[in-house]
Length: 389
Image 1 (cartoon, rainbow, N blue to C red):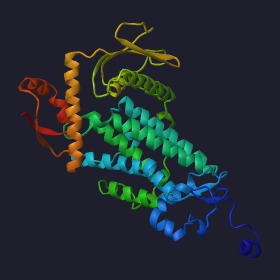
Image 2: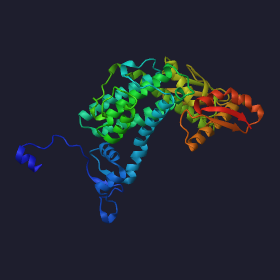
Image 3: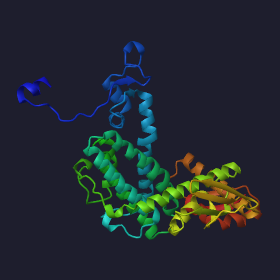
Image 4: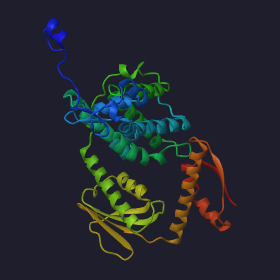
């Protein structure tokens, strides 16, 4: 500061991004005698430069920053690893499906599902928010907005609800392609938004994706800042998706109250919601898939019915048929077996597309049940052959 003022007669910077005071993660000032002091080089070596940079960036500049290994591990687990796992899921299934990522761009996305349209709307809203906040040096709001999008919108909802759309056993066609095109666009935008904050992680993922294309730049740090496509932002669709999530929350609460696990299919759900009356069919399908319901019906009024459980929220209500018929119970058993198969695939370290054979200990009378649901196994567990013991 002295050199700049004396030699240049000007401050060395116009704006500085910082925070109040740096404390140890126990909330006390750092002192070696207290054992809570972390030397910078030691922290960078053990924590990593990117997690440290994200820790500083997401911090409210008006508040003290409690810094330590525990706090850094929390950021890794609750954000950076989730982002990496989204990328790994995408690239593993793209490899299994032999997906061509060449020449994918926003203007080339076609045949979008309602889920694709929603995530693209949320993405453009994110780009707009992050750009505005960084222009105003509000780094904390920008970083937290990215976290919320990655964890809640992209990972927890979009990718999880798209699992059945991809994989070697899923039907090839526009829906599978739209997932890969949409996800690829999301990754390219996120990498450019995050690159100034976490330069090493974003470059690693960018280079891995660039191996599959020929029209990308040498480095993510040479890419242009992402544009905002206002025409792709749909406030109406985003509001309806919030209603969908609220319906699903009520449905899961009803299941929990009735001690019925989500893997157990149920017959019917009735939904009373003014906001969803004119909803696209794809939104209702999302509710059915999320709650594992055979049929969902939009009604003008929820009536009390025997064997049905009613749950109410703000401006909406649901009624869930909790009767489990013998056929539904058997289908639930199939899903229990499916989950076990998936867990064993993870134990064995199998990749998507690597098929297995299984022998199950059900009676011969259950063979028809299994065969009737074999498409479920083929789609989600990649079973080549299954036979009763």
